[in-house]
Length: 320
Ligand code: APR
Image (cartoon, rainbow, N blue to C red; front, side, top):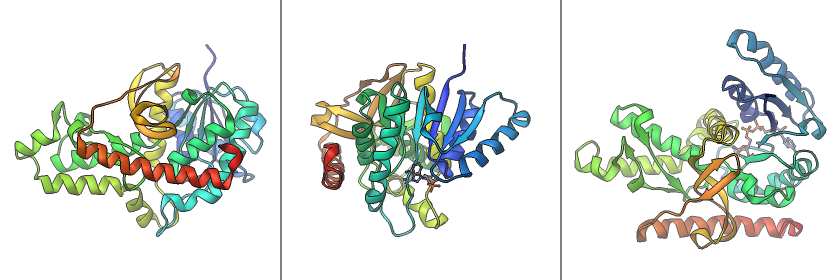
């Protein structure tokens, strides 16, 4: 069977990492697209030259033309600008919205059957804009945030408990902003929920609260350290997890920014919720029970996402 084709729109820090990981995971052939001449070509040649050493077969191509993404099975979008210290994700909206308009048109023209994963920030608003601009079915356009936020939460918990990251599960709902909702009740180690671990003396409630806070601000922590850009290894790994579930029809249950049509009381909005990803794209949005506190936190997060989408509609009324 022919290899799958993965198109990466944006060949910056995340795009380059995605290209390497897609090869290492043997997901298929990779096309790197960017508006900057030379960068996608250089990065793809560099990775192609690593394949004999790393031991995988994949074709790599770099391009500045949308024609080259034709027939892609998966498109992962990182085009746009990242944060610098002192910026919130929403500060990027003006520039990145216009980028989503262009990228959406490119996907519509050349890869309308693809499963599209958006990473560009502010995530929940940009994936909404990308779906509108591309006109692809909403179940084929999804945003990467929850897998990353949950991975940060899992890493911090594993580190605190001194257990394998493989045995830690964690759940983060809501928008990809500082008011995201890490769900303590649904997180734990090998099936033991976090509140029970607190009772068992593994951690104090204060320690858990500090980890929740660090998870919420996880992206900013990296921006402040890097100073010239934002996180790229963990975001790329998270998107590859989602692409793998689609390409291999794994039906993983992953927190993703998905289009809501009534679920969680929302319509025409992208929000971080648990979804099943399989060969049909987003095959199911899973509605979980929330207690009053969790519901209040989610409502706050929804309000932030609605505000950002409202700004998008003002800047580009054609998308609404
Ligand atoms: N079309 C295609 N590519 C574009 C466009 C465009 N209209 N505008 C910018 N780009 C490219 C840039 O040339 C750059 O190579 O997008 C790439 C972005 O790469 P980086 O600046 O390295 O940013 P990165 O760290 O990869 O993050 C990309 O993901 O997590 C989010 O907040 C982050 O919005 C940012 C995005």
